[in-house]
Image 1 (tube, rainbow, N blue to C red):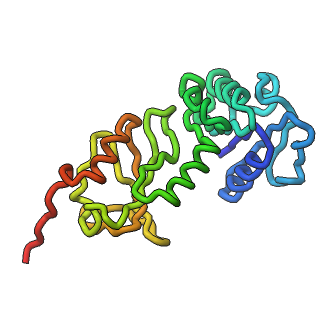
Image 2 (image 1 turned 180 degrees about the horizontal axis):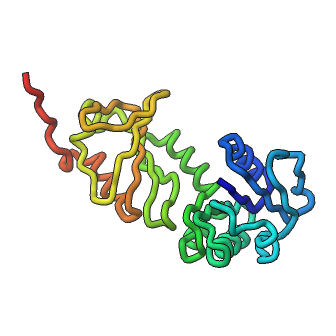
Image 3 (image 1 turned 90 degrees about the vertical axis):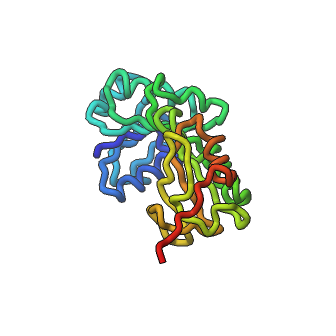
Length: 230
């Protein structure tokens, strides 16, 4: 894929290196001369210009990008870049960086943003997940905030410990997508037994957080374990 990245600061460069390692073609667009350093990521294309300007995006060939990432340190700029990429150039997938959590509500499909990643939010989620076992942590908003990726580390005293995945009754529009156990990534099947310390990763409707929490912590929402034939 061809991927454009607006903003070649530390974040933009790190993302570019990762994407290049995956075999993608990457173009870095940077307005500030101090950040314009093609030698820092020599395998990428570079363009010195303001990604908020139509002329710069035209010169970058934005219409040929499969993905555009707005990764600047300015939320206003990231919103403008996302809107222009989607509305003027028809980029199929627009990803934007959120620098201030108070601006998170703006990063939606109304501004052309398909996926918004909150840098401070991700850090906070990492801290919460590390120190607050049993707490449902929001990792990322999906589809302009209509859905969320969340994680919960199963505590020792949870009624699910020792029970099969199939006994967990989740609300509608919710899926347990994986269970992380040590170095193992488990695709959960109904017969898999949950253990204390399992990191359960969910994709859910953004309104379902309370119901997911109740399903995990409330024994009344759990079906009785299925008895095995002797």
